[in-house]
Structures are given as C-alpha cells and as structure tokens.
Image (tube, rainbow, N blue to C red):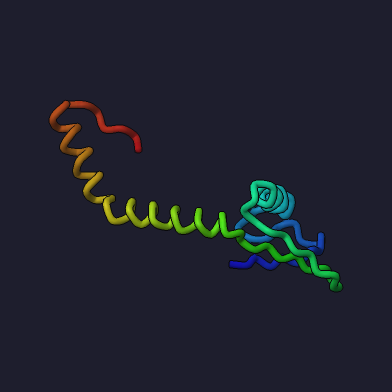
Length: 95
C-alpha cells in the first residue's frame, strides 16, 4: 500500500480539509513508530512516497477484522442494549 504526495508547498490543503502540515506531522509520527517508510525521489518537483511496513500491514489486517466484527454484530449489540435497558429500567447511554 503506497501513498504518493507531491512535495510542493503551493497547496495548503491535501484532501478532506486536512492541511499539509497536519498530514506531514502525522505521517512523520507513523514513520517514527515504525509503521511507514518514507522515500524521497530527487525529481522536479520532488516526489515523496510512503509505504506500509510489515508491522503496519499486520495492524491493518487486525483493525480490518475488528471493524468487520463490529459491523456484523451491530444489530445484536443494539438489541442487547435495548433488552438490558428494559430489564434494568435505565436510561440508554448516549452512544
């Protein structure tokens, strides 16, 4: 999995309203944590490529599994909460 970013400073927003600075700070943190490898190519304009490390790929697989579990069991969890709230006569949580 690769992320390609032009290294020019002309754009202040990359995507979804995220500033280039915040994106760069978060990418550097992920690099520091050993989840990303940053490669800079000596081109004009400069090109920067980020790739996932094996550790990040393993994390991605784990999180994908967790998200899938949550999606599959969303209705059952909602039903269990409703049943619990009915039995205990409590106000439902704001989740």
